[in-house]
Amino acid sequence: MKKIIIYLVNFNKGGAEWVITNLANTMADNGRPVTIVSIKFGNMSTELSSTVNYKHFSGQWLKAFWYMYRKLWLNRFDVMLTTQRGGTVFAYLLKIFSFSKTKHVVREAASNFNQHFESKGFLTAAIWRRLFRLSYGHAYRLIVNSAGTGEDLISAGIISDKSYYQIDNPLDIDRIRQKALMENKFTKPPDMIQIVTIARLVPKKCIDVLIHAYERVRVHYPQSRLVIVGDGPLKEELEQIVSKLGLNNHVVFAGWLSNPYPVLRESNLFVLPSKWEGFGQVLIEALALGVPCVSTDTSDSPSYILDKGQYGILVEPESFDGLAAGILQSLNQNHKALRLIKRAEMFNKQAITGKYEQVFFLE
Image (cartoon, rainbow, N blue to C red; front, side, top):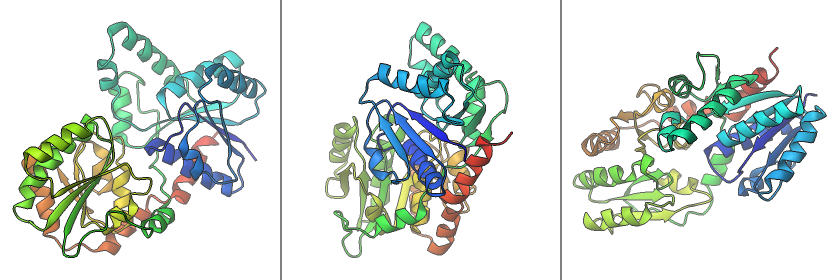
């Protein structure tokens, strides 16, 4: 049985880490030897199956480098998967120095390479661009989670053509449903219309746009509230916006929740107001619970997940009025929960993991 090692810098709970966890758990539970190595310890390790071998180095880069160097030099694994950009560059250098025959597969999930370079100085950006070109360009296989992500790699000059495989993110649908039935600390009052978003409170998520849009929605739905699940550097600024708009009694900052699914399950609508998204996995989580969705049409991913508006409403990014209109349109519709749930099943982890393994071992 061919062995897989997954190499990460961080393993804290996040979108990419959930993808890795679902892949690793599914492959290992199916009998394939899987090892995850992270330089820093991460709380995502608590979600790993007992059949996955996990090793971390408490942030000690040199120890991690030496461990991986020996494993690669001895060709102890058939495939090495990376999905974090810094880790991908690190792994590429390890493979070069160790003369390893291990096949390096790179997964990319975000459509923001140009923004990444713009945020750095000229020399720093030039160095990183070169390193990304080398590590992505010399990968045995390159996997992207959407066509938009692939196009971003090309436009940023990281790769020169569509030499990648597009595979959806795998979700553990059964786990989501089980977790959704657990205790909800933010139980919705009777007869309350609840709108929810789940996001890190950072500029690209545009939670400020959602708050302004909700102000317009509340005129039509006074018995409603907006629940914001997540934390981040913009929390205080967002709270000030809520206060200025007189929405203190109608907007709930729930903070980061280890299990947001009970809140999501009780909601009448999920909203994704981001400026851009690599994949928008939380849209699938909402669909899996039968919750209607409104999303900004930021890239091909939300449009793909919602099938060009067949399973949710797509609106223009960064528009107060546009987002408000989309929310009102959704709240005024009759949604068939079973139809939304069936759409989410297309992204279940068993089928998606099989596609990953085909790419890993395709000769």
